[in-house]
Image (cartoon, rainbow, N blue to C red; front, side, top):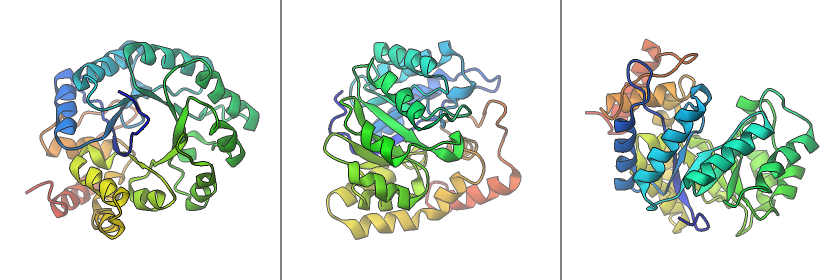
Length: 296
């Protein structure tokens, strides 16, 4: 599947676990079907929401293979190849490319942080050695470092740099890097409460946690904006803020897995160091889901 024209809602897919903590592959396949049936434009597997940081290499590859096989080329599948070790990120990237991932997500080197040139070379080391489009991931709140504007400008010209997932929450930063967008380098929102603002800067969609529970809504919001119905898109964004905020009431993906469990799609199990949603956050989530029509 060619990622060139990918726009809209890319779901940051959760990895469902059984009560004993093992991967629930049956539920994983059902989630893929749920997204294929409800307008999701692409799937990101093994991202933060997929809890890849708690999974073994073998589990990562089996989850990616399960999703890629189930999708069967109908929509693009992007594999998370992030690591704070550049060599490890390259190894993951090549393994996911071999499995048939249509694209890769590359994150800044968390914990190490590095300096500007080191971060640039962290990305180009992978970009130079793979043959699939890559989405750079800027989320300094989790990694402790950002992709500088200068590095975005440099990386935007690389033939394998498809775009940037912008999740800093800083609209000023997003505005600055929007200057480097083109038909060959795109921006997707990495924050569900800022999709329309990012679209207004020339973005083409969102990598979304919200879409895990409301795929049709997120797809339709993006479609409205991209087809010129900007007021309609803004209304969807604003009408769903309570749900979006509840989905981030505790560390992602704890709330979204609890939400999917309430919908009967998966169990709520997360792996340590994550733990089950607190009663207060759970009550807020349930109320928001009812308000959004996801629960009776």
